[in-house]
Length: 99
Figure 1 (cartoon, rainbow, N blue to C red):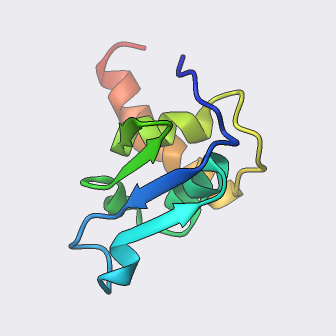
Figure 2: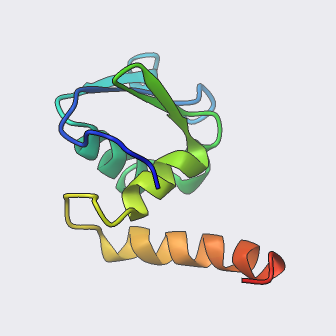
């Protein structure tokens, strides 16, 4: 389980190959929950690879951002499409691990 303050300020650094402009490579958010929601619901799925989120001087990358979004303590409503995308993405990995 990841301990994070979803209300803390956050900075998002999007991988250069997925950011269309230099300005899109960096975004600040008033709340980490909003940054996580943006990552999962607005960015292309592949953009998580190489992108990272900084919250309270801690860095979260790809799978860790997804885990924050899927955590029980995540305070915002999740989009059905993002949740389904995450389920499809993680199901084969869980099957391979024998879960």
